[in-house]
Amino acid sequence: MTPETIDGPGIRLRLSRLEDIPDTTAACSDPLVQHFLPALPSPYTEADARWWITEGAPAAWAGGGAAYTIADRETDRLLGTVGLNDPAPSRQEAAIGYWVAPWARGRGVATAATQTLADQAFASGMHRLELLTVPENIASQRVALAAGFRPEGVRRLASRGRDGERADLLTWARLAGDPPGPAPRLLPDLPDGRLTDGVVELRPRGPQHAEAFYHLQTRPETVAVLVPPEPPRRADIERNCREVQSRWLRDQVANLAIIDASSGTTAGFCQLVLDSPQFHQGMIGYGLLAAWRGRGYATRAVRLLAEWGFAEVQLGRIWADTHAGNVASERVLERAGFRREGRVRGRFPAGDGHRTDSTLFGLLPGDLPELPEAR
Image (cartoon, rainbow, N blue to C red; front, top):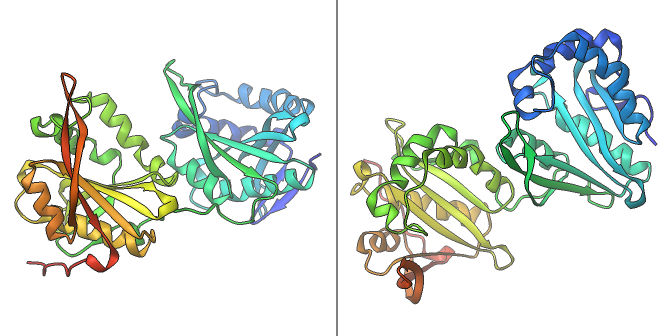
């Protein structure tokens, strides 16, 4: 079904050789490979590499799958591995997996290898390929998208880590009939990785923002509007910040940190939720740390995010709502151009079986005002 050698852009897929033992040992000892492939022996030795080359990889071939070394087209040096796992011939489907050596990262090796093997598999009669990632492996999810795989769903607690902890697995799939090229995205990356008006910057939220996000989420006024109204655990916040960009890549929500442009300090957070993509509609939320309130930063952040939503996400309407009576938040929205549209009865759970109303605001592209000048 698959040949022993396949050439791709800058790479060659070939069978493993005993000459690959030193590089295989070094690559599989890398902390990142060990972290995302907990089934690997630890420590990983040359004996483990020899077993893989002489027994593990041949067994994958014998079982109807494939196990290739990714090699440099010019030097033939090992850059990683890629293979087809869990083949189901009756359904014409399999899973694709890979790892890339530390000396080969940042060169598009994983994407080139995944595309090359997928194209060969489809040409050989395969109908569907799956690619599985844990939510925190953002780099692998970008590879999936670049190789034409689309997000499909979540396998709950299907992955078991080296410490015994279980995690979800995200499913990405590519079909033989899918168009070539990267998978389409509704929520693109920010231009140059940020949005700014000179006073505030919006940058994707990540692990580096965990402390500030925990501080915001545990403030009494924030906890009061959480559902349920309970402060989150620090470990949950840290995991959320490691995984949050995954939801962006899956076209669910763009989560951003609000940064003071002059000092680089985190001032708060905001998000654009793609709640109704078929109607080109999204929802904005925001919150500032106490020390940064009263400076107009929330208005600036909302204005920047809405402008990006209309121009780059191609939304036709953005909405937001506040707890009824939250005057400060209502003023933020009104200064950003949102118009008050009504009151939603019983919108939020309030505990003890009660619910509270919210005030609904809407924004259309023509409603955006000019941003105030930077001071």
